[in-house]
Image 1 (cartoon, rainbow, N blue to C red):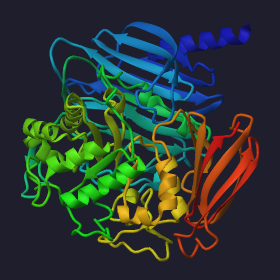
Image 2: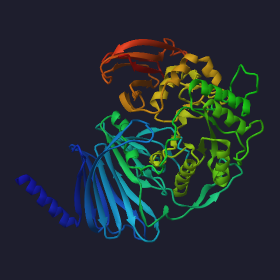
Image 3: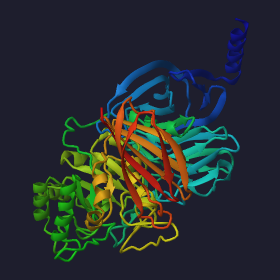
Length: 629
């Protein structure tokens, strides 16, 4: 007993000298430990896993007054332990999420609380305030201290004006640009091989968090200030951008909670796939009736540029073309058809362009069991708010895709939630395009089915797109806006249907392409968008991925590689014992030269068999495995 006694005495002596109070919080499995220290004007923590220090966070503060740092005089503390199962409204990754954590809440005499939750998968903390009057938040402060040699994957920007479509970069932490700012999620790769994913959840009526560097192995937070004035443009795409800002970041109710600051921890890549902290820390669903919310594949008209053939009408944004798309969706069981940019004047959502009869289209779609969605510019929607939603309801529109927000200050974050709530009132699903990172809104409003960003999956076929039938090798690829192609093999594009995490999967091409490639189309049509289980079977970030998803008793596996050809060995010990039919699409023998080359195979396997995946450069492999017994 001498050693524990010595530690206790030393800790007490340290706390007396520094005038600080220390608390220890451990994860349910005992592997993670957070050491939290509260001094008069400072809160800091250190997170360790086993014997390894992962990071420190110092200067934690919520500054709502003129003082540089508020006073943190502890009034009381409370501990709590939770072990439960959360069932998501939409089975994006799994039918159920374990929700197990230990919690510490420290209340201060100032009326501010800070809560820490330590999961087996990582640490989260957030502030809450209890004041009668409203508050101005001038800054929320944190400084993340890492080790020299740690690296990161991230998106960077020159300002808070962002469509969140920048390519991801990989760089050592102490070599980050000190002028740029860094969007979340921000993934740290430690020299030990462990990962730290920094992000946030339960973001509502508050600005998004970004990171910045001071040129060392440390990061600090920054937030877009509250808008003061805006610029206005004749272009609906670019109007109401922030011109001037206030000296605070948010105006808030005096009594409220603030976003969770999340530090997800993983030993390997599969730990990142299995981490559900963003969903678990978000507010529960606001909606009582969710029966009308239907995930599904959406086909849209913009990327394929209406390149259809073998018809007796002129293709374009018109009634005949829309019906052609709807017929294709109905024949293949795809739930949604989306009118993208061009169906209406940019500044008017109440009228369609000449040649398009929306009532006729939606009536036809309803008769075919297909739901119609509309793309909207956010500012036009804001300007015509009630009139637009009422018009959409009269037309029978079942969803909207909102675009060109390019901000995550408090006012824009508030608008996202207003759109989700109003769409839910009208029983419409939502897709936010060019959107800031997922931060819990999809749990609060399950009708928010997806968000789109990342240049790789959109820009006129400038790189990739899931499910496209116009495939190209890297050497043959050309960015052709009017007749786009996707970089990567046919099997790669199809595997993305399994790999990408979205209960609204996008089908980008022309129906004519899919009619021509019926074998591949039939395969895609059988891939679900909601799943009971998700597992990363193998993978290294930026190199290759093999992801398996289960819906009922059927498994789907998607595999992709970068521009390096790759031979992967894949055991099937994740299958329950028995015999299975396996239907697969793999790279053809000449896929390295002709990206559309593929081979379809039907075979029978036993659980535990070892599969051999031969991936061409930029290649892929996708399989459906169904039980025979």
